[in-house]
Structure formats: structure tokens, C-alpha cells
Image (cartoon, rainbow over all chains, first blue to last red; front, side, top):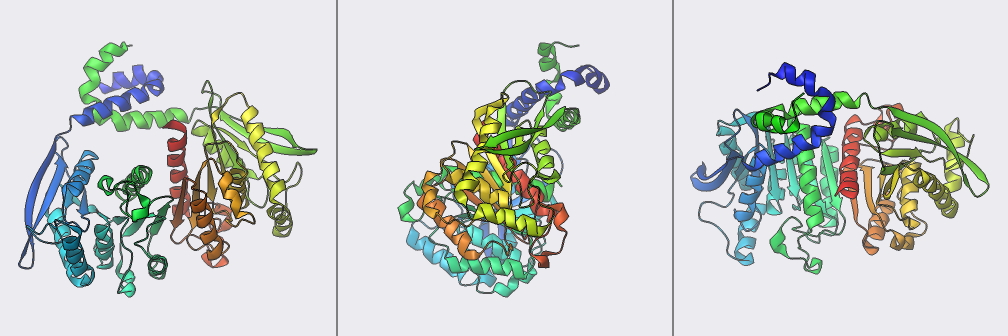
Length: 273
Length: 273
């Protein structure tokens, strides 16, 4: 094998044209990354919660941690897959369980009841999501100075509540989350950066709530960015939501792809700058 | 020098840790790119216009072209610098001249008069910006299937008018542009993708104009994205605007950096997918 010095001297002038090749090889190598996943119980008060951990075992050393908060259906394969995608990006990902071990709504009626319980009790919601954050940060692979949280729908609302609770993290990302707040003055507690990925045609986020959210961020001098995706309604990152916008919730491949890329760019800014 | 085959065999397993090095070297090499710049006269009707071309002479073959449209002060060093930045990214960049050769406002009063003339005559504005697009597309280095336009303030308004004129291009990006339209029905002519980078506290873009713009995009089924940057006012990409938000126009380094990155991601989507 060539020593690095020789490599640098002999290969420098052909480097530029080889860059795409190098990137392709890096991509090929990452396919062989060993993503380890496991369920993990933790507690909030006396309540047992069951989260899901994912990380790349082929990377050594501490790395950023990302908390993933579920939709109103509770922790499903959808969030687990997102955690695995985050692990492939080199992060330690942990899916929080807001509802509790074994509480996995089987239909929209059960989902509405569970989500409603926490949306009407923001103190409890904040306690639950902070318990998930603690569980993530206790993982020895996590660099606790570089932690973020992302959430979908109900989970989007939840990560903004995590920020409003004053969590000492780097950033939160909401994907089609509800943006209403019963306690807008709590915006002043926000210490982290906020990215909101929003479907421009989402009928479940009222214009008044959107305006109030913006004012909350403004008044509290938060570092925030809001992206509106044209043609996207609620649940735009969720393939199982179908493709009928008239239902108010539908998958939108374009907005899904763009919002994931925006999240990666946001992470680059908060973790690697 | 090692042949590629040897390189691949021997170096593959250390590739992953060398990627940052490769990228650093690529960055170092790009500094040696030879950016060629030149002023270029062209016509709209009987009026002579004087634009500014920039491209990297070390790249061979056709590449995407990007039209750059100036602020209300007319074509200045600011837009020329942006064109050079775009050339460094590998694009052929051409700064349009909307006002005409020699018409370079020296103060805000002259700037207001010139900008006002075109903002109140959108047909003329569209003719002028399309003349710039033609000039760019006539450049033999431009791949005319991959052309976009970006603009700042007045230029942001102008590139959206370019889209509304039905220009057959891939996309437009407005940075802190005015979003009003005297002819909102013209949204139906838009064939390209639209990215709007907007300061969330910009006092020069009225809430009603923003809402009308969104409705125009919605009604016309345009592929559009709007990004609101918290804490940013008008002119957030313009270092000469100072840092006093209370004036309504000020530089915002964070929003400048993020919007440039968003533009690059947008270009990746429209040029390279």
C-alpha cells in the first residue's frame, strides 16, 4: 500500500476527475455499514416507555444523536425506518415512545384519543419527550453537545414543545407538524434552532396557527426557518397516506425528498459547522 | 503513477476515511479554476443593453446556464460577484442588464425611478429579461436544456416575471424579491420550478402580496417552494445593506448562507437529477 505522502504527490493532479469515482466508492462502502437496531425500555415517572435505537456499528467514537418522534399512530415501522436512515447518515437515532409501552393505536379513533390526550396536556407531552431525549443522551455513543430532534405530524408538534420546554439541544425539525401553542409565551424558552417543513396546502394547520407560530418565533428571537412546499398537504412524507390531496393528507414524493435534504442541510449547519 | 485498477484494489479499504481529504483537495484544485469574465452588449428592440458573462475556462463542454438579474441599483459589482460565484460552481453565468447600457443609478432616487418604470410596465420588464435570457442561451457553452435565472430584490421580481412570461427554462430563484403581480392570472404560463427565498421580517413585501403570490402558484399548479428566514429583512444577501434590521433592509449572514445553499440544492434538482 502506498503511504499517504506518495499518494498525495503522485495522485494529486488526477484527483479532480476521480472525485465522482471516490464518492461512488464511498456510497458502495456505506451499503456495507452495519446498522444495529434494538428496542429499548425507559421510564417517565412510573410509566414504562418502549423506544427504538439505531446506529452504525462500523463507525467508532461518539457522534451526533437524533431523537425521532412519532405520528399520532404511535411508534410504528415508519419512524423505525427513519431512524435507520439517520443511522446510515452516521447519527445515533432513537425513536421516542410518547404513549407508553404497548400503547399502539390500531385505528384513527384510538390515534385521535391518544394524540388528543397529549396535545391537551403539554406539560405531560414535554415530560414524555424529554424522557426520550434523556434516554438518547445516556447512550454512550452520543456526543451530547450535538443532539437534535425530528418529528412527524404529532411528532412535529412534540419536538417544537421539546424546544419550548427549554431543552438544551442544537435543533429541532418538524415535518407537517401542528404548529398551534396554548402557551405561546413559552417561545422565550427556546434555546435551539428550529426548522419547520410545511405543506403549503396542509388543511390541518390553520392559517391563524401558522401566523401565531411565526409571531411566537419572532417575539422570542428564535433562529427559525419555515419552508412551504407547494402542492403538498398533510403527511407529505408518509407513503402510506396515498396520493389524493383532496383528503387533506397525502404522500408527496417531491416534498418528501426536498424536506429530507433540507433536514440534512440543517444538520450540517448545527452539527458540523 | 499507479494505474486505476491497482489504486482501486489497494486503496479501497482506506477510502472511507480519506473522503474528507479528497474533498479538501478538490476544493484546493477548484481555486485554480480559470474564471473568465467579460462585458457583453446585446439588444432588446432598439435598446442596447450591457451584460456581464462569467464562466470557468478550465471546464470543457456545455454546461447549465444561469441568468442573474440585478437589484434596483442596476448591474453592479454585487451581481458580477454572484456571477463569478456561479461560474466557480461550474455554470455559465450571465448578468442581465434590464435598464440599458450606461443607465446605472447613482442613488436611491434614481434607482427608485428606474425600478418603478419597469415594475409598472411588466410587458417591457419581461421583454428586457427575455432579451438577457436569449443572450445567455446564444452562448455556445450553455446547455440550453439546463437554464435557470436568479434575481435579487427588483431582480427577484423580474425572474418571477420571466417565469410568468412562459419562458422555457428549468427554474427561477428569487432572493428577497417583491412578489406582487398586477396580472396574477399569468401564473398559468409558468413552465418552470420556482424557489422563493424570503426574509420573514421583510417589511417591503406586504402580507397580502405574499398571500396572493402563494394563491397564484397554487391556482396555476406550479412546482414552487417558499422559504422564510426568521430574523431576516429585505436585502438579506447584500453585505452593503448594513446590519440594522430596523431600517427594513439589512444583511443577514445566516440567511445569505442558507439561501445560497438552498439555491445550490434547487439547481442540483433541476439540472442534475
